[in-house]
Each structure stands twice: as C-alpha cells, then as structure tokens.
Image 1 (spheres, rainbow, N blue to C red):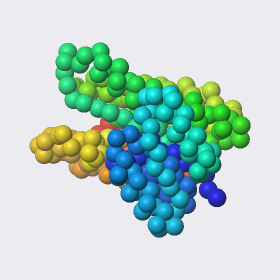
Image 2: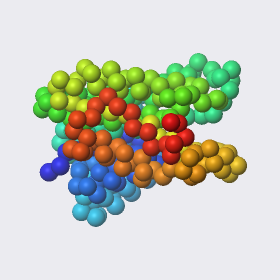
Image 3: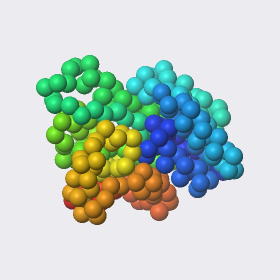
Image 4: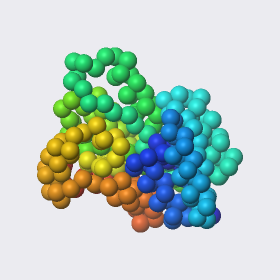
Length: 244
C-alpha cells in the first residue's frame, strides 16, 4: 500500500484538489475539514466509490486537542501519516489599521499554529520510521507581501521560515520538508474579489490567467514523490510568473 496522506483544509479549493490527486495515485487520504462537513464527506465517498481509500475527519487545526484526535483517527483507520500537507488557512482583506488583535491572533492560530501542531503530531511517527514528507502551503504574498493583506502575508512568510528551519532539523532523519507558494488561484478564497480585480490580477500575470487548484495540487504531489527525493527546504512557486 502507498503512503498515507493527511491534507488539512481539504473540503475545497487547493486542499480538495490535492486530496483527490493523491487518491487517484493510489494513496489512502485523510481529508481534514473544520466547518464544511458535507463537501469533505462527499469527496471521501467519491474517492471510496472509485476504488480509492479516504476518510473525512473534523478538526480545528488551531486547537491542540482536536489535532491530536485527528491524527489518532487517521492512524486507526488508515495507518500512520507518511505525507502531511498543511493547507488549512484563513484570510481577510482589510487595512492594517482596521485589524484588531483578536483577528491577528486568530489568523496566526490557524495559518501558523495549525502547521506547528500538525507537524508536532506527524513527526514522531516519521522519525521512528526514518522517512516522511511535509509540504506546507504558503503564498506568493508570503514572499513579497500584499497591501490590505498584511496579516495573511505575515503568516505566509512565517510558513516559509518554518519550512526552511524544520527541513534542516529533520533532514538527517530522512524527512523532507518543502513549501508551495501559489499565486492567484481560482478558488473560493478569492471569491470576494470583483471581476475587475480578477481581470487585473490575471493581466498582471505573465501567463495572463489565474491558476487552477489542480495545478497547485500537482506541485504538491511532485514534492511528495520519489522524483523529488533530493529536494528539501525549498519553495516551489506555481504563480504564473506573477512573482519572479
């Protein structure tokens, strides 16, 4: 049996596309969700009906006890997690002066603390078997920053720092840690943008279009695959050339 995969924030967008791709490639997949129960369960049902192996599991990744329970459930039903995709994130556009401390803390709790907690749960098993792969989802805004998305940009920059430092720490134990920093992707997270905003972003991209969740999923899959066996601590950027 192929390696077991856990994808956080897998009920929609990049997370869902990633979970589906790993399932198609023969991996047992745990699809994490927080609020969107039905889409996650429907995706798991579709995967199982097509001959794959999948389960949906609820957890708020910012809560240690829920993350621990999620990993225990995944271990019981699918086996230890060999590949962790830290995708769960939240975002809101606003002026920095309009952001209150509670919003700042909540965004960091999900986008950064959630990765810490999931890595903390995944690593003991990976260290024991001396192998494993962690892929953290950042953003091009974590590389260059975005006006009116200061908090989100700060969290995604932290993800890149976490990736690079952890890769150095666990590399001697045979564990690879990499990062994917997508550009503007046609997902629900960007649904708040107007058609004019989306058009402007597409025109500002050298490939003159928005990305698709499936394109980011393929980048994630590559980093988890044997083809990337000598790659760790790196940031792969499926952004259409928006940031070069």
